[in-house]
Image 1 (cartoon, rainbow, N blue to C red):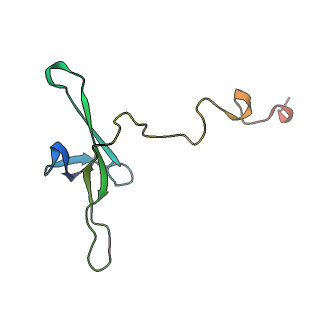
Image 2: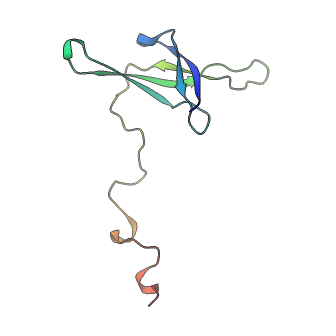
Image 3: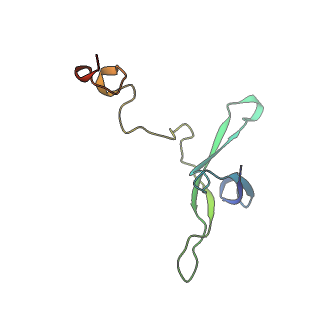
Length: 106
């Protein structure tokens, strides 16, 4: 797996540069969640960092890397992927198959 050294801004990781795994698109993930164990055996907390553009070139305005900014209001339990339809619903009444029943080969 390929990784990229990415700076972190704000929060407990302010000023640190950590290696972050790169996805198949060549970009790091949009959100970076860091679980932190609770003090004295308490419930763990999750730090949430959001990916933002680090800089742009002066002449052409091209993208020059990423950085992560701390997001204290983010909900650590939010879903990463939301389906555009309600879960559990399927076309065709739930019976699988690509051929409709009235056109099935007999």
